[in-house]
Length: 380
Image (cartoon, rainbow, N blue to C red; front, side, top):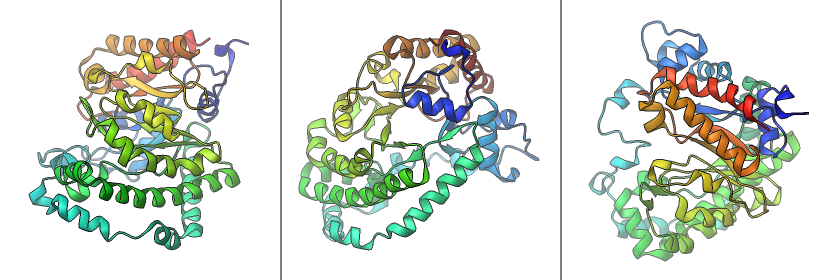
């Protein structure tokens, strides 16, 4: 039978696509939208007084309903619109870390190294980790989320990794970057600590996925790149960072679980290194910075299969400033590249980053509506 003769619910469509099986259309990704007007219109749930989350009885459920109504098949967490006091305050940078200043955080590179020296050993981290409690927390969270999605969408699990941008919030940007360059042994020790924490949680995830019949796909990542490439050279990252990410992922890889990495910025210089850690695919692809989405559709993971890809509609250009027609053309471009590169399998249509409040709602609707219509039309 032809692909468009199938009739699939969202969850099944997503799982089939992630397993490189035949689907009726490419699944669509959602959840990261800070646009209250779109969420209100798509959910059909009006806010009583204005665009503030307090006017929704259950903001997460409202947002989820909005995505289900427009045909979203895969959700990797939900980002809600920020409160007005955050969006109007120039001191609130994206994700918080851009505005961290050394004098505000109070760290110097030397103080960072002292902080690291006092961290528990990997053996102490493991001894203090409550595997049974974390198992129950994870299973309860996943079952509740998937229950909310029903068969309309797959709630993709998260996974734990070795944080990079989290250190900007902890230490400040400059102190952490200088520590990585000047005090590499300390940077390694910090990542050994993070890796053991992540490995313990990933052991829980791997066990739960097997025992509780949770779809074996994980979404994770941490911001390492900006518009010109990695914030630290790939060679230094290869010494102080990637080996510990690989260790953190080992329980997932041993269980045959696929890992999709969220990518920000110009990630091309470290794609090979991330694949070597066990990453099976990527979400994001900010093409405006030079990421070649077409080339990625032809790349393969360590197991020889094509990369799992989620993208690559550009929020800050196509969605924010394009017309409905240009949005449709970009949807067609992305789907066509995925079909040319791997027959459309292992691909999910989505945006390169979270959808901001300034994006016209009609462009968001056009992306999802045309994604369904065009995807069914051309899927082999």
